[in-house]
Amino acid sequence: MRGFTLIEILMVVAIIGVLATTILVSVGSAHNKGIDTSTKENLHTIQNQAELRHSNTGSYGTAVAVQGSAITTAPAYNSTGANFFISDQQANLALAAALNGGGSGYYAIGVNGQSWAVAIETKSVTGYWCVDAQGTAKVITSTALGGGTAVAVCP
Image (cartoon, rainbow, N blue to C red):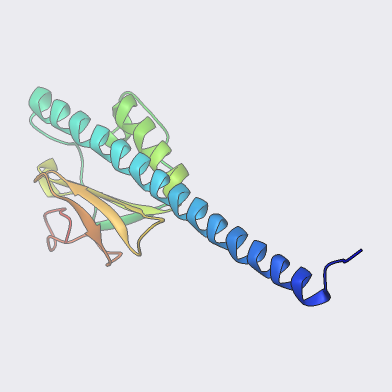
């Protein structure tokens, strides 16, 4: 009766270890891509709600930190809030959901309420997914939103 040698057993254990590591890395990567996709969809909802607000009122609301106000949670919903991030319930919920997946971000409304931008940290690539009133949707690496002192845009 012949048994397995120590070398054969170690080889099998090593092969199983390599396969397990490969699978775990793939699952983690897919999970992060899924979170990023959810973040992008939530920011797309924010874009739609912002344009509805602008169509109805001619403004996105009162200016908020044009270079971007750092956030880890969405501002509290208030139907009479000063800007659409606060006063539009769907935009507020979408921002909360995006931050829940991404972890941190920045948002701003430009002077005179005619521009806005929001950026949420991504998981599968380094940077933030940024969307703005100009229809921009892209990954940015800067933590500051662009546009100078009056306009909020993705840099």
